[in-house]
Length: 162
Image (tube, helix red, strand yellow):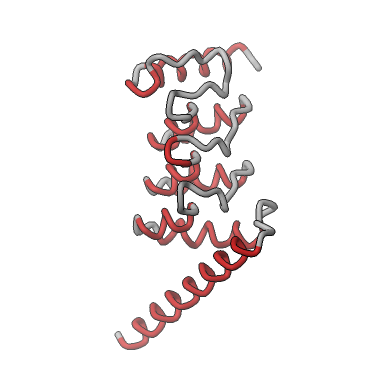
């Protein structure tokens, strides 16, 4: 890592350490977590700071780390509507099938009204190397696809009526 990158990373960790959730975390390890299991990427994803997200990914942070309530950085980016960060995380190998204590990122996006992110996630889900092999997961994914198709059909019908 270049000296400039090291300095940027140090500054980022200082900024993250200034928050109550990370004030006690020793960032001598890129994958250090707070007591809830969140790493620095969780924080950057919530903030919507794409430069910080890029820096952390380049430095080798675990992008699929499950933290508080099973949330990954992707879940936080989806929840907060940070489309560009969602795309960056997915392009960098984030698992679109990662579960919280119950929800996939797609469900989190839908519940938060982030339909554009749902569209993006759908594309990545269909081609993901993380695609689940277990029957319950496949069934859940099929149900999500059917839900998407039904929603798209309803939208189209409403547009035609208008």
